[in-house]
Image (tube, rainbow, N blue to C red; front, side, top):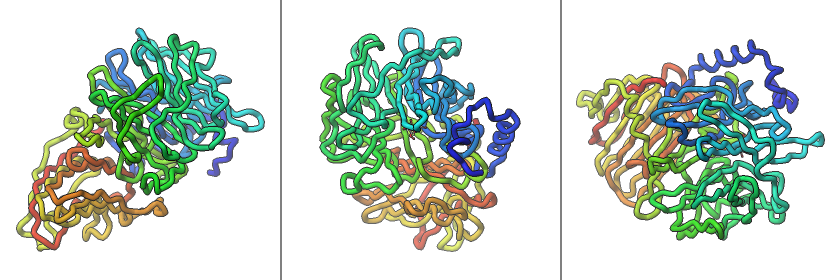
Length: 497
Ligand code: FRU
């Protein structure tokens, strides 16, 4: 099907229930489907939105185009959870059905205000001439689950930005409200984080742009998020068109962070010693991460696993995208972000199997294990090891998601998705590598969910996330090496949610 503009923006009510049911069945029966991650019931999922804790539950929403694998008319889908792992789908929450969001209920955030949750989102509107207007809208969610959109935008675009002005994050600080937004500056056509302040959510003061770097942040910033970890600010954002000299990355668009010492709200200044933004994830597909400070004192993050302007093999089955698992954020002594699975992820584990080097295998192949498609694999490697871990491998491991590792000299982990059986997006490279300063032990905590991998390296000091697509029968785990390996591992099949 060709996704013409007309089809992308066809009103929801003009799609038949039959069409939607067919799409849902197609996604449900996909061989690439996940079991324990948030994925679309039909069509395309992109950014997480409104990640929050309200009314004794965790809430997350996501950008949805339910009618195919296309960036069409977007809405918010709503899920709730008691443990950040088991999510219940409550369905459509914000439809693009008013003059303030006629061409999409775009990304935004949520904040608890008194006894309600305020959803703040970008209303994408196109004029007859197809000019874009971006309204920053609000909608109240009450304890009965009723959503009421505000009749007027909370913030309208100031003079100094172009039409690219979106993705508000609403924050409360010392009894006042602040909003940061992704923006493109009108004069320089460069990426900025805009800052607004209000005492009453009615009158908003434009505080200009957040000062967090001297470098040019590409031509546009999307999805900025500010969280505090041990009172230290961390700004997470997606600079599009960032020069590779400023900060290196391989993905089409990066999702990066800058950690600092202080955030001066009124001056809009993030004080930092960090020289350049750092990739939040070392893998292939993380974008639009949303993080927030929860009432339990922790900072949590969740990401879209998918990238704008790229196609994925599941597109031919009319669905695309998923959310990452939720991660708990902390900072190490050097101000680097550490991301770890939330404790309830362990509740998905079924009976585990201990994996050890197998004496009766030839020297090259030191472990072969018949796995499923949805599992966790923990592997601890001693120093002075090197080899390859093959996941989703066929019999001779000529096809696999290959993880080369070394704990010799300067260690590294290199993920290669070129030979999984079905290749895609090769123009942005088929490998991602994390290098270590010194040789050391290596701890890998690997989550496989159908066509998604999340690899936590050394207790979350790095996370390598990506999609991979393999033949359905390729389900073997194999470890190969020229040297006798010293490792211990545990394999757990994981339950679906
Ligand atoms: C990022 C993004 C946001 C926008 C949303 C639309 O992926 O482009 O900037 O609000 O997606 O779906």
